[in-house]
Length: 428
Image 1 (cartoon, one colour):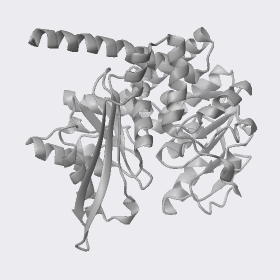
Image 2: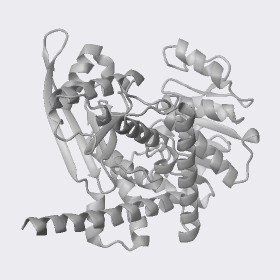
Image 3: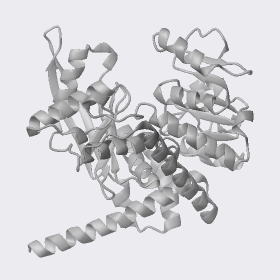
């Protein structure tokens, strides 16, 4: 089945949902164009000297989608598949994600076309520092705040902060989030997205009057998001019957012992391959299991019009960005599958990133229980807002989330433009 799945353009999927919400809000064409199009699209080219003495060129991107709500915020990907359409879609999703959760950030995304597995640590540091140099006038705590994403982590964010600080002649912790604790990082950041997915999953179960201790879940992807989602849900009493990573998918109807699997994963070179206490199944079959909660936490467009009709889960909680393509939305809705959209479901990461940025700006360090409580409060409030809008407008939670986000950004954009007009008028 997976070979039949035609991958949609992720930016087009975002636009499809955007337009449905914009129609409901009766946004005029001028406002639509402004909110659809990125404020800035930057392409940078640079080179580094590799460890063997040869020079290699790299291409990188930074897309600033919107800054109406505050400084733009978004991760940086190191991957050979990085392309402008994907970066544009992810930047827009960050705008809507921040708006839905009420976080004072706009949306951005960045990326460098490279395979981080093929480079030494010293080469990755050079790549990061050159990319930072090329964008040193774009980044800034009150302008654009990068974060980790696919292929990057605390090391890269630390190098970025250090290089940006060198360029500006002083240490500026708040220019980036996702740093090591010793570099100004925040407690709770590593597990934040997975914790958020688990919080949202419990809320969705409660919405359908299902008890966590009697519910089952399948999780596609066992990277940072999938692993922590699995752990937190396991601790809440859910039976995790299936998990997968890029190497293999496993099923155990009696439930998988997640702490045991995590230990195996860490001792097995960060892979679930060969895990003995479950039966191997096809990757595509995991998505079709009869479970209460399905969490696609791997990549975009894994559920499309081709396989949406075969989904048997009661709830889909989008741990990844864009795992359900827009052509699958109607099918899932008609089959009474409750889909909690990515811009709400995986917003735990940007929420705790905001906490890190705030701690840096205030020169504070918060306790972990304080961070987790604030995260839970924000996500619960956002969840209730989305479901209230879903009832009010008689739409799916995804479209409800877009309605909330578009209204907030459109209103802020209008205020921003009035202020800019007044400023120009005074200057003249």
